[in-house]
Length: 250
Image 1 (cartoon, rainbow, N blue to C red):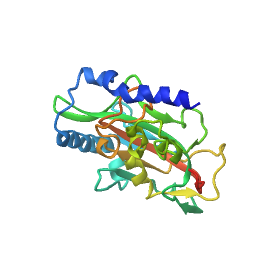
Image 2: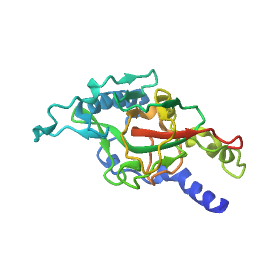
Image 3: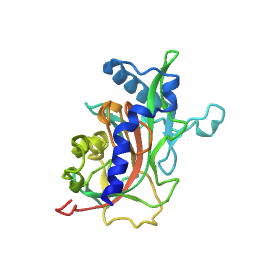
């Protein structure tokens, strides 16, 4: 099993240099990271203005031709909070679990989640989040399995991986796996208590938007999708079904 993991890792260490998203063909990444950060912030604001939440909390884009969503409030009107890191979170009114419990920093997490990633691009003066046409999703249990996801590595990587001396030094760091901006935004949400069952209907409780500087930035990262996640902004649309204490050995 360890050999399989090492083979995967070997590919993940070099894939970002040799495999590019299709956006790279039409958009040139700025050398200045400050410009990248500005693009991210501007594109996130546009995303907040161009999208709303439906009755189950799913992010939906406003239609330019259909009036059915004219009464909906855009995300920018749902009290989004921007943290110093650039992370934006929205706690959806009326969708928070009750009773509930605080989510511990190292809790084992079960959640229904749709997580997409985007490249903030400047095209003819318009800065917007552009999804990859090849692989736009980090994970999607809402439209996929329909069952909550348990403890993904991008939320928390187990200590056994960090302690594995057979791995290269870069792969023994938490930032290689974890999206810190998601962890930061998650602090403002609570988990259902008692935990919901896997078959419980979802009612997504909020949104966390993580700019690239609070995700992987321009650093090496684990190969989650087969494509580079450098400079990518992540949008998490989720519901925490429940948490549990993490075992001491993890």
